[in-house]
Length: 246
Image (cartoon, rainbow, N blue to C red; front, side, top):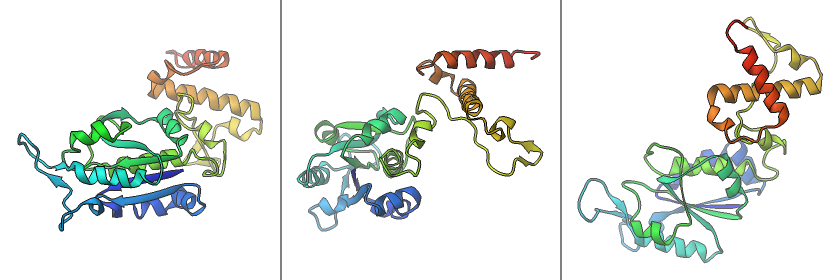
């Protein structure tokens, strides 16, 4: 898979893309991440990428010409799904990460200042994506989040190929609690079932705790989760355990 990131701050990405899983995935050739400085697509001596907005108002707007030039040059190398990073876009979530992971090439346009000239949005963009209902100083943090979330879903990137299917939100449920050694720490013991070696009991406990955590923290997810008959039984057990006086 290939990412093309169009940004006025390519240096923002240098360290994160060299670290941990992303760094190893790049070194192994599992993902190709290319950074493109928007200023390289300007035609003036000072490489200006922004200008004052028509109609007045505070802030600057990214000019259309450099973005159109970058878009044309990069698509000359082959088709790409063009994503504009904007607080007005579709909220990024795990299902969307899975959709993007199926695409062979994604171009991420990182905004700044007051955003893009509207003609960029009207003409060049296939999809707009937002991380949530807040505003960042630029599109670079959002681009990193999307690259990270999508890359870890690619085959061979994680050591455990089943790991993505166990993540929080993989089934519209939050993940169950995890423990490691020692078996008791600061007076807090690991649940006995995890020490039992009984795989079916451990599986059932993990599923139940996943449901419990989702019910407590994100009950909205349960409304769209595909619950099994066992899940319904586990939810009934949780309700009984949490009744007053129990």
